[in-house]
Amino acid sequence: MLKMTGVKIELLTKMAMHDFVEKAKRGGISMACQRYFKANNPKMGKAFDSSKPTSWISYVDANNLYGWAMSQFLPIGGYECQMQGEGIS
Image 1 (spheres, rainbow, N blue to C red):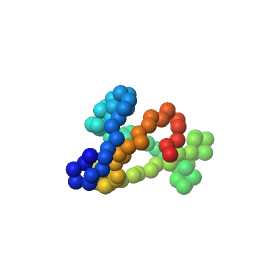
Image 2 (image 1 turned 120 degrees about the vertical axis):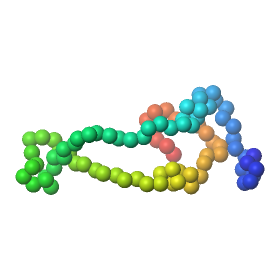
Image 3 (image 1 turned 90 degrees about the vertical axis):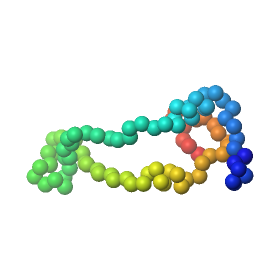
Image 4 (image 1 turned 45 degrees about the horizontal axis):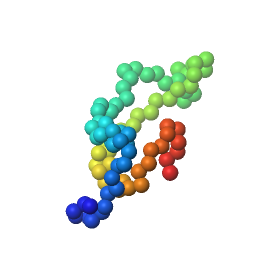
């Protein structure tokens, strides 16, 4: 039971689930990096090459991901493993 909230947390009963959580506790480098990329789409005007596949470039600047994650609710029970490819309900 948590001291301040009084919530009772269900224990993990499967060793595989415990091992998964232990491995996932610490993150690593998180980035997507490619030094050069050239877009090819109709909005490029004369630079568009219709003989090549169409491609776009998207720039995403995400801030405060850690703060957002810390403001979300944590699971307290009903843990279950799902096979790869199964939807999350």
